[in-house]
Image (tube, rainbow over the protein chains, first blue to last red):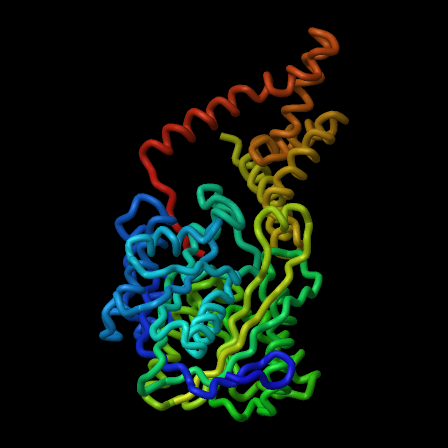
Length: 334
Length: 122
């Protein structure tokens, strides 16, 4: 691995993505991408007494599914890098407590999935690991309860708000394999656009996405056209438009090959999800389901995934703090 | 049955709710803040003695929305001060609204025994 430019890294030995798995909830099942997910749930409790337990089960089952698909014995997996949105990352730690694999909990808000892939790639590239799991999850009901209002209140969502994806995505990264490969990554800086509205996350994160996107292109010398597709995590409809404008003001036209996982996840008109999907599970499931399959079928050969996160908690928004954003980029090629 | 009264209640109650909806859609106010604003506004209008004109005009259209609850708090406090003195300012409001508050707690509790929270549809 070598550092290029200010903050990007090229992997001289690309890291293999051996398998992925994704499980989503019932709302995502009604969305346009449903056929790409390994499993769609019929109800958001999934037989558990609480949403938090259901989210832990999502993590556990997707990780087990990804391990089974990879054909690697779980005893041969060196690390599990995982995170979620619930306080102190309990969805991951409770879901993975029986795995017997060394666990490193990560928090990058909704950027956690790509953050975990960056950390796992670095561990594998440095010969500290041969096989590693990356995982991230979110659940609409547990997220609403923690970040907004209890669902029992039944309050309305404003038009700029996004719909937290119920779902978990996992990927198994290995030192060797037949691809797709992680070839480079650009960890992002914290960027605060001064947005204070917790119902307008897309706008809060767009600046961070632009910063990472532009840094990636500058550092690597690539142009947007290098990639068949560029995806951001969960900017939603509002944030997506802001990013297109911000990028074009910096001289990068991404209009032709750029989309957002939150925009792809739901049908805005039919599902009334307002500004689109969000949450750790958004990019995790869209990558593990849709993008990975497109790479395997060679419909995409080079993809840039930019996971976006809003680094706030419920206390910081109640105290009127602005919402700092972060975005991590990873390029995947076959 | 006074159909014209029902019509007036529908219009006034509806307008109060439309204002709330516009505040949700067009401002950054959270539902909790809108709720508190409505109660406070009702208490002020009730304290000034103006809200009763709206109740005379629209009945339940003015008492059922949250502004009606605010009005009840103010009215209760004033009545209690008149009969029991200064301490009534602290006891009157809750006393006047006691029936509604106790019913909300009681029926809320009963509902929680037989139902489970669900995901919202939109």
